[in-house]
Image (cartoon, rainbow, N blue to C red; front, side, top):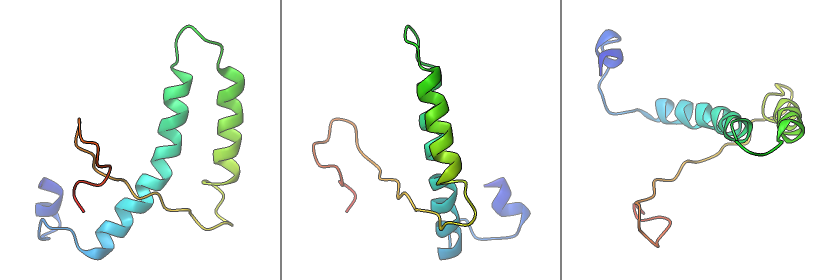
Length: 86
């Protein structure tokens, strides 16, 4: 809310903001997956983490290739329908 007030913008997101959030999520989600794997306890994961880092570096973080967008889906806990909002 404070960020919107600082820039004198309405709180509801405009289409450009929505696209920017999807692009940001598409960058962060693969890194989050690596972080979860790297913090695994009781197992040897360093080789898997290095392979995952290489894949992210050569696909998601490669500026010469288009970014593959990942659309986040809200799921209600305990719901069998994977798209309850649609």
